[in-house]
Image 1 (cartoon, rainbow, N blue to C red):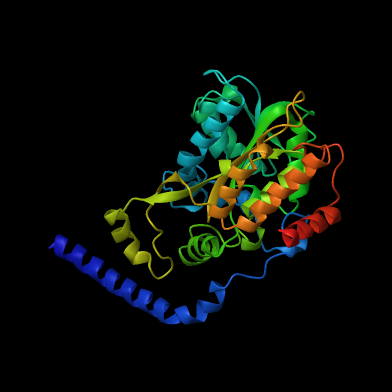
Image 2 (tube, helix red, strand yellow):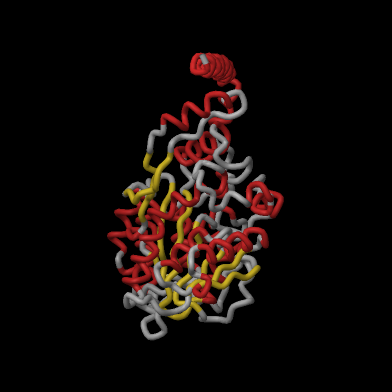
Amino acid sequence: SSMADRLSVLFRAAANGASTFRSRLLRLPQRLPELVPPPEFACRIEALPENCSSINNDIYNDPDIGSSWHSDDTSSDLATLQLLNAARIPYFDRVWSQQLQLPPTRPGAFLEVGCGGGVATVALAGLGYHMSGVDVSERALEAAREHARRSGVRDKTVFTAGSAYDLSAFDDASFDGVVLADVLEHLLDLPAAVSEVHRVLKPGGVFVFDTINRTYRSYLAAIVLAQDVFRMLPPNTHDWRLFIKPHELCFLLQTKGFLVDTAQFRGFAPTFRPDPVALLSAIPHLATKLPAPPLGDFVEISSLEINYLGWAQKPPASDAGRGLRAASSSSGRAEREAGCEAEGKGMASEADKDQAAGVPGEAPANDRPVPAERLAKEFRAFRRSS
């Protein structure tokens, strides 16, 4: 009898959920305008005014959301970030180990800017890196410190309050590597942040990052589905206009003095792990929230259409005129894969012009900062010429 009662309750809940789901489908045409991305900014890689975006970077101070950094339920709010580690941490480790020629003990000093709850910082510390983490959210830093303690790497981590635009807590040339994981697409002043990364890196130091490409596919995946339909993320976690195309980021990095080759960029995407139990348990809640897709760990892929990983190097003091920009042909291949063939050719020609002018592959020195207005003007000219 009790089994029959439970089945009856389950079927009633399923019927109610199906009815709600049907009504949502009927209202779907009302959402069609939202399937069209908003107009892009004239130049994403110049400093943007604070009131230009609806992005809410204060969500990390929300006590309910802030408590989900390390939840076992990886479909809840910030816990989804844990799934990214399966792809990005091996990539970051591989790049640092190879480019810095690190021994297995991984000596040196490394910094994560915008570390949040320490999802990436603690994972890298677990591999042996001595990590510093900086973030504007004190609540997130508390979660990071607790995560480091529980993970047994408290002696390898130091967390400090600070902004990506002002890393004055750290001296010039103080880190072998810097990482920005899932941060660049939240920043309004990319030139300031990239300049600070360049400043705190030692000569020859390596900057690694992951971010989101600004394409129609990324709009559907990150905004329409993840944020609006399935509500895997709080509203206004992301603003599609702030996503960054690989050729834009490459241009900015070169302008700020980095050596960069987009042929070294890699995409990453989630796997899927169907969970019938979770799907059944979500049926009674269909009236308020659709069940999140059964995402699994992210894996590296070749396409840069949505999420991508990359790295850039501060020129070694003894070899400032050589480096990654020499590989212009491989750069072009990666640009084509990202849908940026014309821009890739443009970058190669710019490198040739530099060499002809007696500046072989060297971007403007970081001690001669490029004003935001000039940066925007140069980028527009660069796109027209390509």
